[in-house]
Image 1 (cartoon, rainbow, N blue to C red):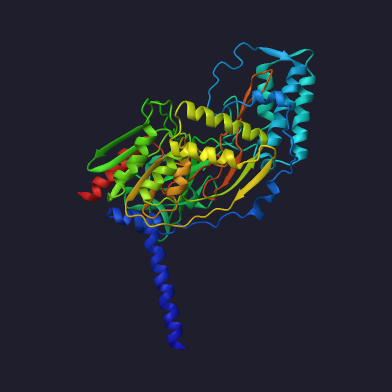
Image 2 (cartoon, rainbow, N blue to C red; image 1 turned 90 degrees about the vertical axis):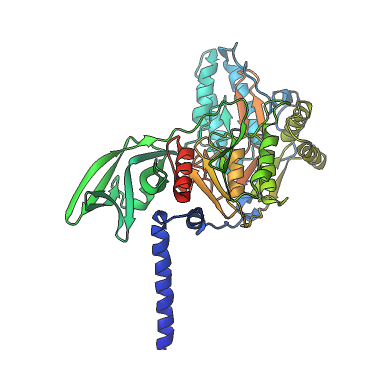
Length: 504
């Protein structure tokens, strides 16, 4: 019996030692291997969403088109841009505005995958009636801008970053607020800052005692691992009120914080490859081709082959607001040497309106060589497999497993890393030896941007998706969160400084 108790005691002590080692190892990373060991220790793959979990979102539909057939011309091509929409429209008759609203709600009911995900039929009907009643308060005409504002206000329950009204999304976004001037350390008693030899422990932040929620692992300007104050919030902050304690002394003081400003990419060539201090650095600024002479995605996918046998590489996805998924998919396949890509559980609405849109996308992509031949073949296969006489839901259960990876990959991301770029983040989350650095991503992942319609009279453009993807690690509007938080624009410089420090 004593031996059994002794064995249990040894196990408990070993577990306690591991926890202490994990908590303090942030400051003990003396090699690249240490860094990756620390931030890959607790990563795991979540269980897939099952069909029974999402059946409630499958709106029962008949096999009607949902709109008059002659109005299919207002189902716009999702690959096309329409910069002149509404330029010559200041106002429209109230009857025309009501017609636009009815058209929009019919289109969404019959082709938007998020229709029942975000609201019941009663709520949709209520919002349509509210907008119609507001329009009827006008005598004869209503300004286009006022109709736009009504739509934005009454459709704010759609928390889908891909759902846009004239490029405006109602999504409530979480921003990262941080202070990187006050370095924080940790010991067995908690997080503290030093004033000379005196340790002042952080006991509260904005009257919250869950200090861990406000202390983020980071890199300072010298490339040394540390902790800084930071909070991810939908509310704006200019300061955090921090409570300190040292022995029997206590005080509170406001600590100034700044909002992280994500990168805005405007380079003509989206892809670049360079070697800095013998480390490959790949930068990819978007996931779509501007025209048939734009080979940036092909160059990007090939870069995965170049670094797949390297010991260490950096992938910079800051400011990459997405595009099509085929680039991230092929890059991941080349990087891993595996044709299989991680499959999330998805729910797709294959509608008669959507099939019309899919044909438009296929013809445009083929005409302007926007997709590679393999992707066009997939579109052809999809078009040949759908039944254009029916509306139906297609559920695909996810299959994801953690894979080994010999190339240590540092991925940089920020609040403008979105959509297809987040698809690559999702893929890379299944690999070992990947560390994410920067801020939270955009959280533009739940749906897609495969659908677009133009309201016939007001020429207000509506973008939305025909598929939902279920990813536990990414909350819409909040995104994927990094392992190491850097709120400023110098994330690459700090990473390079860290790597230089441990190699010297």
